Every structure is written in C-alpha cells, then in structure tokens.
Length: 143
Image (cartoon, one colour):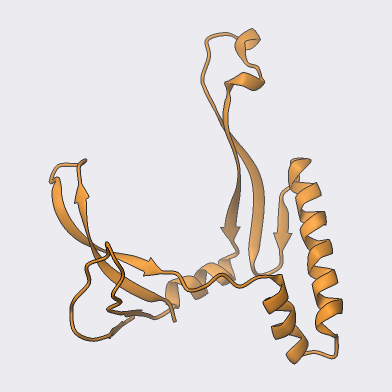
C-alpha cells in the first residue's frame, strides 16, 4: 500500500498562488534486479541466478528494441515507447538532429494494470523528513 505525505509547497502559478498543502507519495527503497530475482525464485523452481540472467537479457532486448523505435509491450505491465520532443521550425530543411530537444522513454500501463493502480488503497503517514512538514498525529487510510 503506497504511503502518502502531506507537504506544504509554494505555488507560484495559476489563479490562486501562495502556500498550499498537497499529497506526495513517499517512495520506499528501490527494488533492483537482484531482489526481484530472489522474490521470483522463492515462488518458482528456478534459481535466483537463472532469473537474474533472464532479467538482464530482458533489459538488453528491451533496450535494443526501444533504441530501434519499436514499442515494447511487457504483458499486463504495459508498453514502453521511445519518445522525443523537438523544436518547431519554419521549413523542412531546418529539421535536423539539433532541433530534437529531449529523448526519453514513456511507459503506458495496460488497461488491467491501470485499473489496479486506480483501485490501490493509500495510507497517509507522518514521517519526520527535513523539508517535508507533515504533522497530523496518525496514519489515515484512504480509498
């Protein structure tokens, strides 16, 4: 269950600027390939090493395909796309590699995964983190 913090931020844009409170997700520690391989090995007959090798190969093949411009769909997880943003120019001849301002990967969850995201329950928590004022006294579950 994701944990949510209540944080105070200075909002400088929009029709009602000023100090506002908003919800922000508190990210736990990142789970890497090694941890994922261990988790999978506990529920399968494969060793953590076999699974880790498969995950590393998946990483390589997904990277190859994305860099070739091929979207990659990973089952119920969703689809990854290579994307760019570019500066608009007046003529066809002006469109060059220098007009590309950003290269990135976009992830689009599958309908099934997106439904799970929407249905996920969250918990508001108080954590004593410098720069994140959140003092409500207790955890409050939310739908």
